[in-house]
Image (cartoon, rainbow, N blue to C red; front, side):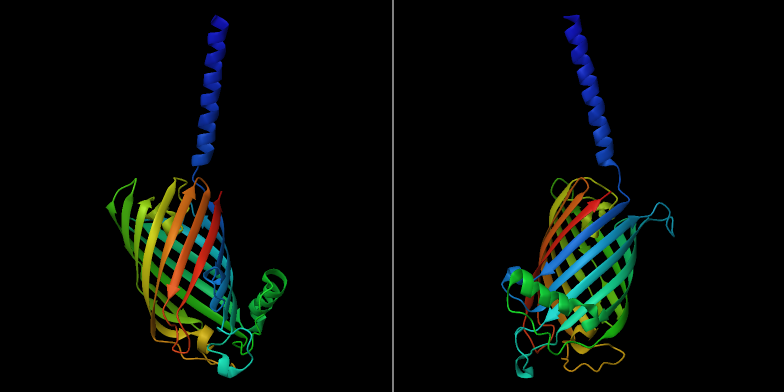
Length: 309
């Protein structure tokens, strides 16, 4: 009988130790994250305008940053974007409502989380035109994978090198605590460069279980592995100064065909975010009003997965 009691005690101790070790590994705050994201409008039964986007990101939490007042994080991103007209099979300008625009770029970003807010800045360089490879990739994808009408990439925006800077500030307020919290945020963003010039105030509402501002997947922060699952409703109003995907390089462009962008448009969306241990999952639907009087409204989906370590 004594043997059985001792055995049971040892089993309980070992189980408790393993559980603590496992918990310690699971709850360890990660310093790195890799994220894959794909945007596409095909699931919305269209294949036009902002047709697809591919993103690969690496995030790094800094032990010692530039400042001592907040936690800092670096983000590096590779991306490729494809914009197409509504009639992707036409080579007649009379049926082309916007130019094809391919883009491949690289960006480096820095962010600092403060109490109730986050400051972010990003520098980006990239190429538009055939040299971006976006048109070649999309033609191959339509021909070999989806076996759907192959885009002509007629009237593509010409080869051009771009440089841009982006500045964002997020201010958040917690209106109700977990387990079903309510957060409201305002996020103004400014862009200046040869690709984008705009000012964009954005309003966001979060409903569900989520972490504070500086450690939440809502703000792309990797300072926690605590479980999160919430919905996000957002609306942004963009004042446009320049859009290179419609009118070419801001310093001058000789593209065969360009269109004039609207000086403002609205975009809104609904997202679902989930963090489980070291895994982040994101799903969203984005809708836009007309970016130009030359073509119609648009919507697309966003799918992303990130792994922290």
